[in-house]
Each structure stands twice: as structure tokens, then as C-alpha cells.
Length: 186
Length: 392
Image (cartoon, rainbow over all chains, first blue to last red; front, side, top):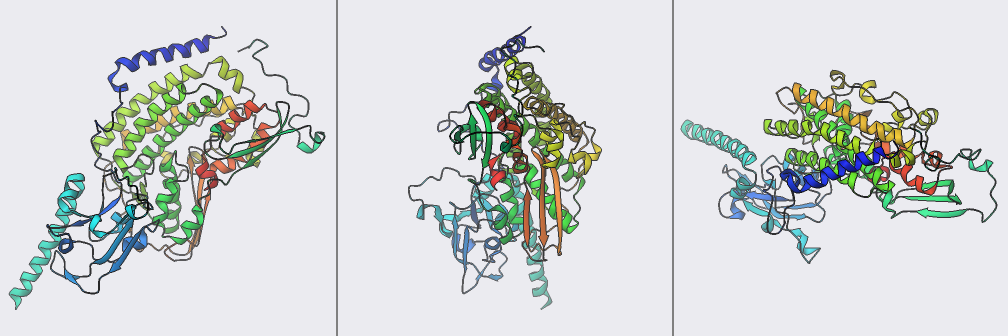
């Protein structure tokens, strides 16, 4: 019969219309500013710099090796290496970034800086409410704005941070053992 | 099905599909319309300069390049790994398959092995991508026919579930940046696989619903059957690939021809069309969705444990040996290939994308000649393009 297909289709739409009022899985709307969806652990927005301890300048993990600057696809990272060295978590003297800027208006959240960083110094943040009225200066973050404590990293990426902490602890234990052995040898 | 005369397509006048030069039109007889660049049916920014004789299309000139972002030249200036997130932005409806094609090309260049589990994850994410691409492309096609919203929203409801899976796995809904040379960036947890299994279990119901809604709809049949016919000869000569080529009845699926990845392990069929019209292209996508579900079910059942990255792969200081390769996959839209020349340096000497959307678009004029203006929108929609990939 002509029109049979249309009627079948309309029956389907009617079913969906009624189900959209009763089926709980269809009612997915979240009233955003008041209600929020729990953040996803793998979420990535913009990078930040991890520091240990309480002082961001002393505990900064970044050693200004500039690998992330080289690998960044849109080239949004700008690093200036320090002239002098400061001791890192293992007590080894290392350079630190005298300047570390990320232009988040250029950053495309690809996470490649995180992947190539050998020092676990740069990680992805999950904060997304970053609107500002200054589109140039307001979106160019310097090292002080980028620095966030390791506790914060543990909070937003729990499983990943646990792995990183374990690896760093193992490295530190190894370095300590080596230092102890060296001291014992003398 | 026999339609009453008012529903039937008007007979085409003799010589409607002849080249323009054969037809005689005086100066000022034709109405030239620029459809686009901001026409809602163009899926982006794309212009069609159409010459009309009444309602009939006499000439059609596609104009593209509005979304040109210099992808290939950028890729020649940055490292191999850094191009990976840029490939997400080519065909932004299906970023996973873009990643896959690029990773495959580089793996061919370096001879890297991909671990078993990573191959399965690639197939699972790739087929989910194909499913959501076909669903939303059918939705867009029907919307351009005038059914504004309903089928598209049904498709997007399903696409949302798949994008949620991608978000949980990779951290982003569309700009996934998931594949790496020699594997995948992150491993899927067993919770993610279970979630995927439950989503995949719901997909056949959606395809059934979509079919009841659309397949036998008389208006859809009247609008699409016999419209925009692409002959198999022309399709082959023009290098058309993907669902469009198969809708013309040519049995060519790179998953079957090339056996890239682990596709030879799965049991699936390649649906073929008969007439090469818009309806066939619509039905091919519908049937391919069913085959994708079959592949997904097999892959989710068989997925082994193990690493997802080649242990020899390195992310820093990646320099493949000199050489040139062409890696291609069956992307949802057709053959997506990456042609790379390496001179041994950290960035490719030449980087070229073979975009299925652009090459499928080249036959647009041939399909549209003699059709009505309203059908041009439909024929264009049935090509299934994304302007990000056409213009790159």
C-alpha cells in the first residue's frame, strides 16, 4: 500500500517520542552551571607544570631540556633555560626554566608534550572554564600560572599519577642506594 | 514498488547526460546560481557554481579551498609524531581512521610491528568510527531531503554513545590522537571493553529502528531512486572509492583487497549496490553498519591481552630510514592514503594525503547533469564529504 512506509516510520517516531519521557537513559540533559558531570580521568585540556613540595620554584620538575618545545605540533611552548643550576628531587644539579610560556590560544590539547617529557614535569590539566577578556595576555600563561603541585595531579589523574609516583620513587631509591654505596665505599 | 504517476520521476530529456558543449544554449538563457559557500547543505564551506535551464542543471562547477589549512606543508616542517594530532582534523567525523592511515604509512616506512592487542583496539575503534560516520551521514542526507532533525537526532543519539566511549579511552571526543607508530597510545581497561560490548549490543536495535524509519519511506524512495546515477565505468575511471564505488556495483573494499591490519581474521561481507543512485548509496551505508557490528562483535570476543605498544618504538628522536611509502586504509568515506618520503631526517621530506572526500567529489558534475536543483543537494549529500578533508 502506498504510504505504508511513511506510517511505519511515524509509528517509530511516536514510540521514540513517548519513550523520551519515560526511559531514564534518554533523559540525559544536565543543567550545566548548577549540575556537572563527573570529570573523566583521561580528560585533557591544557598542560601544566608539576612541582614537588610546597615551593613551586624549588620543586619544579622541569629541567628546561626543551624537548616539548621541539615536539609541540603548533609550537605554542616557549622556554628559556636558566644560566645557573639548582638541585632537583634526586639532589642532582639541573637547569630550570627561567621562562616557560604556553600560549593556550594556540595549544591544541594533543598531549604530545606530556608523552615526550622524560622528567614527568608536564601533565594535562582538566580545567576548562578559562574564558578571559584579554585574548592575548590572558591566554599566555607563564611558569607561575602553569605550576601546580603534585597533589593536584594526583587528584585529577589518580591512576596515572600513582604509576608516575611509583616510577619516580623507584628512581629515587636507586639514586639513594647508589649514593649510599658511594659513601660506604669511601 | 510502483508509484502513482505524480510520484514518479519525470523522464529525462534526450541527451541530458551529454557533455555541455553538445547542448545549445544562447547567451542569457541560463541562470547561474552560486550555491554556497555558506549553504547549510554543504557540510562546511563549499561552493557549487550551477548553471540552470529552468530547474535543470546544465553545468556544475565545484569550488573548494575555503577551509584550506596547509596541512601537508605544516607536516613537512614538524616531526612525524607531531603530525598525528593534525590528522584528527582532516576528516573530523572519523579521526580514528585518519590516525590509523597515518600510523600505517609510517609503520610501513620503519617496518615496525604492531602488537596483537593494539591491532584489535584499532579495529574496534575504527569500526565504531565507521558506524557513527555512516549513521550521521545518513542523518545528514535525510535532513537535506527535508526531514529536518528526526533521523539526524536518532543518529546523533547513537553517535553520542560512541563518542563517550572515545572520550573515556582517549580523553577527547573527536580530536582523539589515539594511534602511535607501533601501537596505540593508551590501553583499554576491561571496564571500557565491557562498556563497549554493551554499546555494541544496542547497535543492531538502532539499525533496525533506522531501517523501519527510512528504508521503505515512499517520499525517500521517490526522491532518491534513479537520482544521481554514477555508472561503474565512470566511478572506476574517476578513482571513486568507498561506499560510493560499491553502490555502483564495483566490488572493491580495501579491507578485503589489502588485508591491512588484521582484517583477514574477521568474517564480513561487502555489500554492493545495483543502480549507483542516491538510494543505493544510502542503503550501502545502512548495510555496512550491520557488517561493522558483526566485525565489532568478533573483535570484542577475541581481543587478547598484552601490550599495546611495540617496546622498540620511541617517541623522542624518531628518524625513519630514507625511503618512500604509501599506506592506505578503507576509511568510512573511501580509500584514505598517506604518501610519505623520508630523507632520514626527523620530519618527512614530502607528505601527501589522498583524501577520499575530494576524489569522490570530482564526479559531482557528472552525477548532477540533468537533475533538478533540489536533487543537487541530495546528490551532494550522498557523496558524504567532510570539507576538512577536501581542503586539508
